[in-house]
Amino acid sequence: MVALIVFFCILLLVVLITWVKLNAFLSFLIVSIISGLLLGIPLEKVTASIQHGIGDTLGSLVIVIILGAMLGKLVAESGAAQKIADVLMRIFGEKYVKWALMVTGFIVGIPLFYNVGFVLMIPLIFSIVYRYKLPAVYTGLPMLAALSVTHGFLPPHPSPTALVLTLKANMGLTLLYGLIIAIPAIIIAGPLFANTLKNMRVEPLKIFQPAKIEANALPGTANSFLTSLLPVLLLIAATILQFAYTSTTGFRSFIIFAGDPSIVMLISLLVATYSLGILMKRPMKAIMNIYGDAVKDVSMIVLIIAGAGALKQVFADSGVSAAISTQLGSLPLHPLLLGWLIAAVIRVCIGSATIAGLTTAGIILPLMSQASVNPSLMVLSVGAGSLMFSHVNDSGFWMFKEYFNLSIKQTLRSWSLMETIVSIVGLIGVMLLNLFV
Image (cartoon, rainbow, N blue to C red; front, side, top):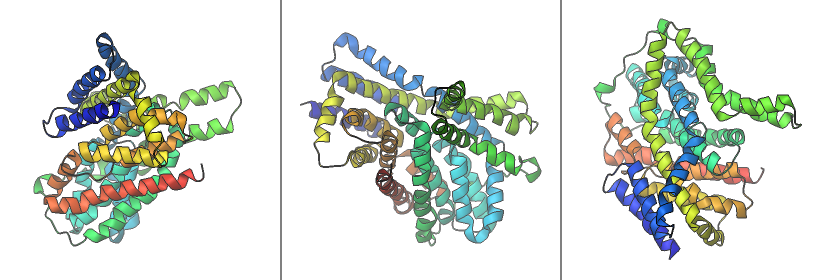
């Protein structure tokens, strides 16, 4: 009976989001209330459970998401992203242009949230498409594959960051393992897969032809690269130093403090405010306006994460998560494969990678205490599953279709297959890493 109630609630969530077209946050709230009542939580405690879930989820997450959005927006608006692309184009040359864009997408995609990154990186793609008269999909897909992988696998992006906190994984280790898995996933789903799309000739809409920032107004090469990569460098350095200094000392306490994702993002943003803002003669008011716009860009993502946290808490407080994990634990599947499969099914049904990842976390969490599974690898497995086969119920599918002026068939052939390759290669990478860590 419990399994039927959970199935009904997840189905209702799918229907509300995809068929009724209700806002995802409102859908989560409604389904959380209905789930609490059907699963036997006392009437007077249902709202308390929802509020607890929202507070717990956002309390440790909202700082990272908001600061990360601000940093990513400044990297794009300042011209640092364009500078990175220009430098890589000079290094790789026209012959290997898609590799240059792939590396650009990977570097810029680390601090830049996916939806924001998609919109802001499209002008870079089209500037190269128009300049060198190249096939648009063949040229642009590697960069978007890199953005997708960073979105699903790497902190400080919302879903992997939330999964790290929910599944009690180590942020630094998750980032290190994620980088190891991300590189082959991007190469296979990006440049290699793009070779099969070279004959897909389409004419991108002229409205998206970009207004390029003049070269003399761009930040320097070192400034652009170091500022964009600073969160990654700080997280990796803090993780290595924590392993190097195992004794309880004041220095180790400082490393733990400085390596906290919130502090890392704050330091990175303060550095960027100077290096990409003040140093570039940009007024402080203009910088703050960029940060304000960044918050607007990710506000709905924050609310969706909050709603997913509410549903997760209802499942936990009702005892259903423990019951489901016991049943799932008896299946002849490796827990990492199970986490990937649940996320993949929810992703295909709902369309949102963030919702798929966070909903799966609420279901799989109790199983983590029963099975000997590396939590960082579980984060990556669920993240990989959450990217599975994007289709007509995913906003990313329609963004790609409209920006590149494709038919539905062409979008399925390019975008949907690229996302599927990323998901499967990610799972393979997780299972291989599990043999060694």
